[in-house]
Image (cartoon, rainbow, N blue to C red; front, side):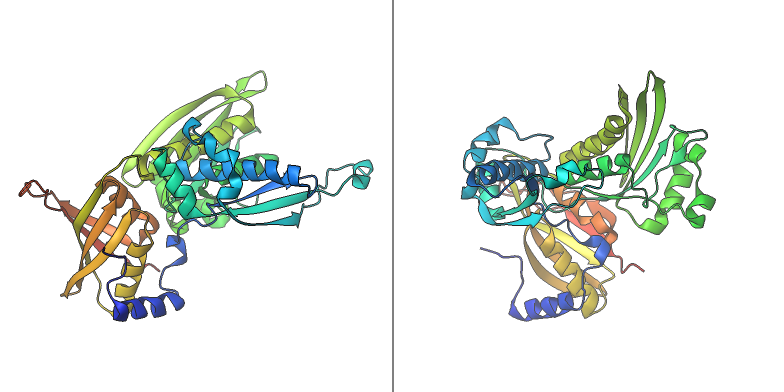
Length: 372
């Protein structure tokens, strides 16, 4: 059986490069998908049992791409200990809004639980459900709120309940949100009218400094009777998607933008239930001119969920040629390859006609991007 590493010598090179920081920080996959924190009032076994069920529910939502635990997976919740690797208790953060009288009540804790990815994934796959790996786009959010005269853009430094609602929704779905600094550079590049008018040229230019994988643009406007509605546009690679959120509470309307974004990502990046495997996909990466670039590319390929195995075929004239065994579809691989900006697409040749009943692999061409 092929493995993701091409040999002992190359493995040593890659390991050394990783220790030196081979993968740029912006290309790192999302961690903590199989972990969750749940508030508990005490350390009793009954409270722990309920919290572990809730923690496993949280994990299943993050790794399937669904908004709630799919019905086919609810039997897993009956025995969360089957999947549990470790747990611990933490002191719950102090609520500054809590009353003095409440301070004399029972101490509140947070139960942290970590589940075994291999066992969880096995049962999710056995139930024929999709699996969404660690590849999650870093999403820059330009959000215009028309809840004050002239409107405002939501900055990274915002600590309001609205920002916490967005953060909670992102954490629930396992996606990474970035917000602009709204410093002098941002203010010179973009204003509220640019966002509410969805001026994509100016928005894209202003987003460049943050090096996101995707950009989510939202405009939340009053609808009357204390309700708000929203329009959204998601720029994800070459794809551009728009939708509207019907009237409702401002926080719920804003959170819906995050939820729908996660839905769209899951459709693109999750490996569908029952998806077949593709063996021997030919991948050419140009711009691989030294050991450092080679190590970064190989380590990145090995880190991707759709990649089952990588074999180095040859090196020639500043290019590396790989043979990749893929879990899922060709689209799963293409979507994962471009995350983080380490590899830039240069075009792909169509697959050759099948020979002896086996389809010849397509040639995928990318260029290594060393970044800043």
